Image 1: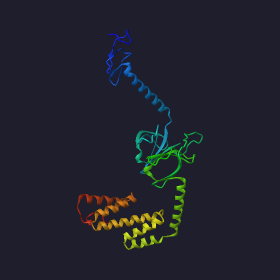
Image 2: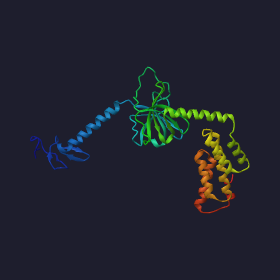
Image 3: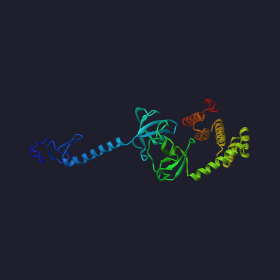
Image 4: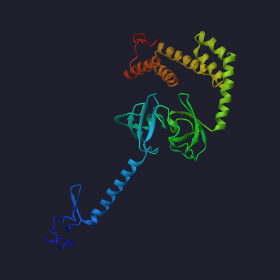
Length: 318
């Protein structure tokens, strides 16, 4: 049987979509299906587009990234593209000297503090090399992370408070950082330059008050704490905090008073109230293993639905 399109060629098959017969030149096989020229054309176009995209991707310079996680860990690596709209990206891991480790990790933005696009992994970049420049279109911003670190720069695009992350171009062009992807989960506050100047003035005033001595409210709170009137102590510490919000020791004293209130609830077998107190303390001091242990013990007691003698729980009243 001769091919309708090529009379000198024999038919080798037919299109699985329309049933048209064709020779080896006409009939193409894709994923186990035979297709005529008409039905194979869009597939061929897609394959060609993917091929061009892959070639373009390989020609694109790879971005050196220092990935810093919210838990303090960090990774070094390279990737082709970083899309802030996606939930994460793939990182080809390197050591701190840039040597490939032959391993690729998927990095989820939700686990991060920030991603630093850098000129070199060790900070010793070649100053004769022209690195990628970003033209910032947004406003000047200052981001303060929950761990206290502050970064200043220009927002790459218009800052959107609803977006989960944003791109910051450092103010200092001589820094090793080319740009920074800031994850908002790790941020305490984002300031305008004017707002940040006001905060610095407030902190300077608070530091002066801190070094000058204790306020009357804090002194009264200390007296109540020593006499084991923890509720009264916490009330006074909060009054002092309202006057001096940046004095860090006041927050620590509030947490200690809250902790002792929780211990008193344990002694009275009021475990639900004790748990609320301990969870509040843990939220303010998330690395306190002693409090974390008490929270776990209290949840265990409440879930069991029993009211055992608190003394029978090791360390519960400590």
